[in-house]
Length: 298
Image (cartoon, rainbow, N blue to C red):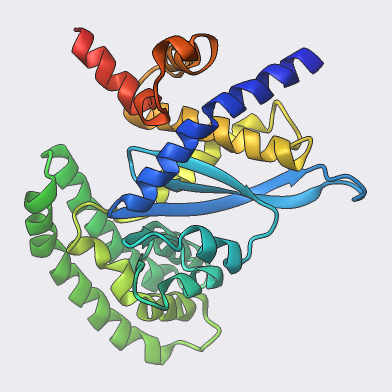
């Protein structure tokens, strides 16, 4: 057991600079998406386990996971202080401080709103389904664009043609329905959610680089949930940070469609065993660099 732990520690330490390069690229990019999930961590002198958080950041090319002991806004604002772009995120109170100075632009998650409408069907089955139909129509348009391989200006033009009519029908529907609902009605809460985050939820229309929702980031935590079958918690704060590094590297491999085992063998040779021979920087040994090397060798 101690040998395996030592090897994992060494692997995370070797790959730390690559993870740092991914974070640098995320901060320099036009957009990123983020989400968080709970992570139990053993902390000396604390009874039981500490309920920390594992945060994910991704833009479809790089994925970075980071451990934070608390789900507050201060650490989030600090780590994203150099980012100037669009942030796709759920509507959480801790995100509000990020958007105050205008450097970071908020983009909402329509999957979140969709789930809220599905939950509202228990109290308003007919009306909630009507509202869900508008959101589903947007997803149908997005799926058609994906099948047609639309990107960049072509995708922007498609979205600007297909989504605004649905958007205005949804607004008119909300105006007609909301007066007849009690303030505590679940459907009324969803309508207030859409009104409060209206611009953010439709930010994707004019920005083809960002997705309609934050589902890709949320899916990263499915792998974390499966990982819980093999471990109940992180054995220490340092272990939590190392776990985040390794999970982020593997997630980036998955995002790029490359074999993680093959990449790791390639990277460890260049960053570990024979690093003095190769003399490469972290940017030269990222999963993207490995993918480019594979393509060049064919």
